[in-house]
Image (cartoon, rainbow, N blue to C red; front, side):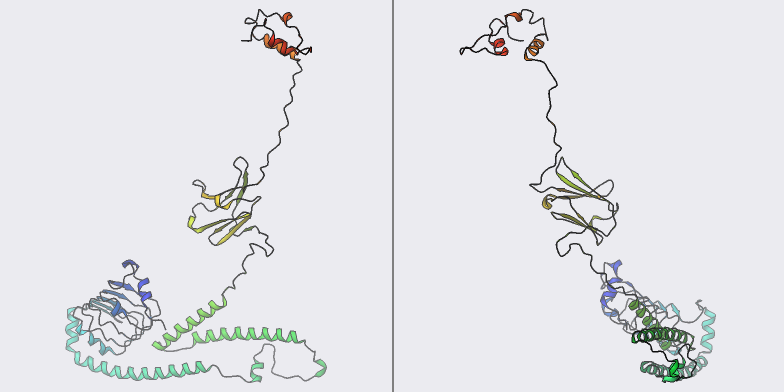
Length: 435
């Protein structure tokens, strides 16, 4: 049984910032509601109330709605027009496709002086002046016939309720148990005869018996459910509030049974790190990525090609010294890094052009930076010191035209040893300095 709750009303008051005290219009249609309640206490300022296509059998708990102008109760189980005297501002009442059998209850609406539109089973056309005059002329006769029809209707409704209660009790007790022979006779392939020839009897293993029994049970249950469904809808019955309620409950039970059958078993959680501490590579969102090493900045860069227009709030980044993990809409992307990094210095940014997620992770301290060794430079010159000096002097002969290389002779030092060519060249006072 579905009841009107405060949460239900608030969820349908979004246009009023979910405030129900000052609510002027609310729609509670197609909610399988079976009773009107709480509305007259929570929404005193209500002007429009939609309650069509529910299972409401009675008009009640609306007499405090003094400002109510339009009440829609079409497609319900209402049998009597009542309890609307307090709705002083009521202008429109819709009771289309209900079960109003006591037509005399329409007279209770005479207190609603502002009522202009009433929808029952008529053609929906406005009643003219001439029709009103003719109706007043034969009003007494019409009232007599209506009372007689109401008496017949009440007797008919009493019998319908008794039959519905009787059928409901039988349904609760369940179907009758069939005898063993009749149940066997319904099994496909059984011709109704029993054979006792021992020679033709083949022993069947216990496992096969269980399997065969299970298969037969599934077949019979499937056939019985289909037969029951066909019988339920093809069985003739009167259109009454009870039959409408029974059809609704049948559909509701069928829907719940289908939901129970389609419940998916939860998948086992994916292994991200094995018990021995090994980190696994995982790509549940199936995203392309690019992992590079920036040797100049001593960093590792991960470029994850997430969707360009995806909101960043749907992503979660976790960088560890040996791996990086990115959760995208609940799906995990995990990658083992080629070297240890510093999580506290790592950064995560979105590319403004492509929308990719770029993780920049500096290498940890103490990590050896791989560099390519360079071979030492070998001089290809084969000039002797004397040739180098001569070449330097020949660079600008105009400035050193007075230098006579014949004056550059070796001399002995104080220890009696012969000095080098450069010492002689620098210490010789006759040689002018290089410009």
